[in-house]
Image (tube, rainbow, N blue to C red; front, side, top):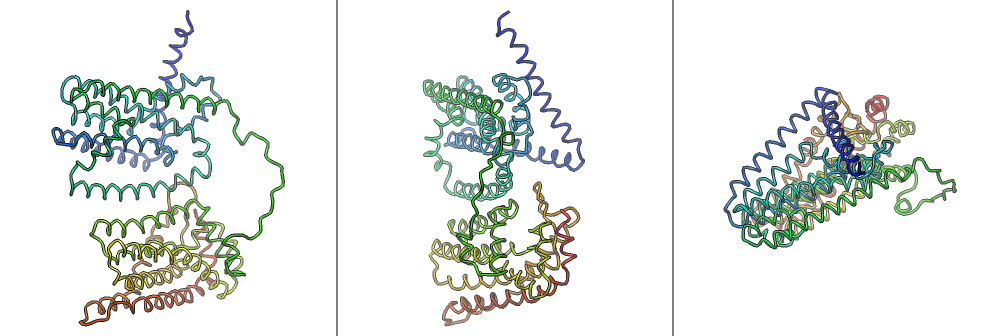
Length: 537
C-alpha cells in the first residue's frame, strides 16, 4: 500500500474529527448559560437576516449599470474583514489558537486541511457565501459566466477563510498576550469608525451613483479575492482569457496562503514558547524620571498626573475608552462638516466625549484604589488628588478640543463663529469635569478587568446615574453660556460672538474648581464606601 493511500483515511478521519470538534465547541458553549444561548441565537438571527436582505438587494440590482464594480468592491471589503477579524476578535473561535494542538501527533498539512474544513462551519462563512452568491446572480449573464461565478465564489470563500487562519497563525503569540487583549478591546473603535465611514460612503453613493466605484474596482478586480468575483463580469462580456487569468490569480493566492499557513503551523508546533525558556537574568537598568514626567509639577500633583496618564497608555479598558472618545469626537463634527451638513458647534462633541473620561475616576483604578485611599487622610488630600486627575485630563482634552474646533471651522470656512465654538467647548468641558468629580465620589462603580463589560453585575443603575445624570447636570450648568450665545447671535447690530471665548474659558475654569471643592469633602468622607464599590469587579 502506498504512503498516499495510507494517509488518505487518516486525513479524512482528522478532518471529520475537527468538524465534530467545531460543532461540539459551539454546542457546549451554548449550554453554559441561558444568556449566552440567547445572545448567540439573537446575533445569528440578526446576521442571517442581514445576509438575506443583502442577497435580495444584490439580486434586485441585476441589470443595473456599474453593479459589477459594486460586487468587486464588496468582495474586497469582505476579504479585508476576514483578514482583520482574528486580530480584533481572537476569542470568537476557540479553534483559532493552534498552540492548543501542539501536543497532538498531527502533521501540518493534514492539520491545515482539517482546520480549513472546520472553519467553513459557522455563521461567518455562511454570510460570506450569501454575499458571493448574490454577486453571481447580480453580474453573471450566460452559462459560461455562471460557471465562472460558481467557481469564483468558492475560490473567494476559501481565500477569505484561509486568509483569516493564516493571519491568526502568524499572530497567535500576539493574540494570546496582553497586547493582543488590548487590541481586542479596541475592536469597538474599529466598528465605530467603520460605521461612520460606511455611512459617509453610502451618502456619497446615494447622491452621485455607482459610477464612482469604477476607478477603485478597476484595480481591485485584479486583487484576490475580488479577482474571482471580477472574473464573472469578464466572462459575461466574452473575455474568457481575462476571466481565466483572474480565476488563476485567485487560485495562486489560495495556494500561497495555504503554504504560509502551513509554515506558521510548523513553526508554532516545533518552536518552544517563551514561557518555557530560561528568563534573562541580566540586571535591568533603572530608569529615572524622563520625558513628560520631568514637565509635571512636583509632589502629589505630578505623581497623580503621571499615574493617570500611564493608565491611559497601558490599561486596556482605559486606553480603549480614550481612543474611542478621541476618534468619535473627531469623526462626528469633521464628517458632518465635510458633507456640508454640519455646524461649527458640532465641535463641542469632542469636548463632551473627552469630558466623560472624568466620570467614575476611582472605578478606573479598580481594586488598586486602596493604595490611593491610604494616602487620603483629609479634605485637602482629596482635593489635590481630584485636581491632579482633572489636570491630567486637561493636558489632552484642551489641545484636542481646540484642534477639532479649528479643523471643523476650516472645513466649513466659518471663522466668524470660531470664538463662540471654542468658548462653548471650554465651558462644556469645565462643566463635565465638575460633575464628573462629584459623581465619581457619589456614584462610584467597578469596571471588570476581564472581558468586554464596562460595569460589574449589579451596578448598572449606578453607572447610568453617574454618567447620564452627570451629563444632564453639565448641560444645565452650561445653560448661561448657551443663552449668551443665542443672545449675541440674534441681537441686531451685535459685534459677534468673540466675547464668548474669554467668558466660556473663565466660566469653565470656575465650574471645574467649584466641582472639585464640592467633591473633595465627599470623597474624603466616603473612602470606605468608594473602595467597596470599585473593588466588586
